[in-house]
Length: 213
Image (tube, rainbow, N blue to C red):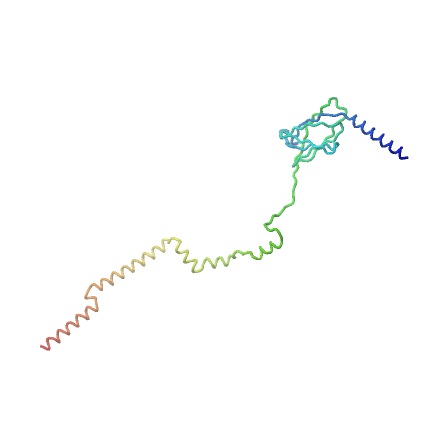
């Protein structure tokens, strides 16, 4: 029984090898371009022969490829951003060459949103949150802006407007005129009360001296 089983296995192996040898080799060549525009070449496409244990061949930057396969092999074209395209090499070709133009349709892939945070763990986020210094709210900012220190510092840095300059000039003129009149009163003896007191004292002393004589 074992001999019969071994004989059948050997016979099946010879049959498979003879069938594989019957498949004609073909030089497959072609160019890969965008299905939306024949002028748009798809470069660096990966060409995979599914019938030969996923044997792969790269297309060049001009979309050109060339490799040896067998009739009936299934060829898959794969590229990022495009749908995969499959091709079966037909049997009974008159020549040992097979030229094909491969159209690949663009494919848009929507990836899920990934949020990147600067914290490596939840504990690190908790520590950062607990030590976070929050910004002042609008009311606190307004109070700081109208404080006495802020207004004083602001008045030193901002230039005066026309009304302030008029008030300042009026006050200076008033002070100058007042000082001028006070100086004039001090310079005129008739307007000086101390000069009058000294004058009266001199008269009194003169009268006393004459009365003694």
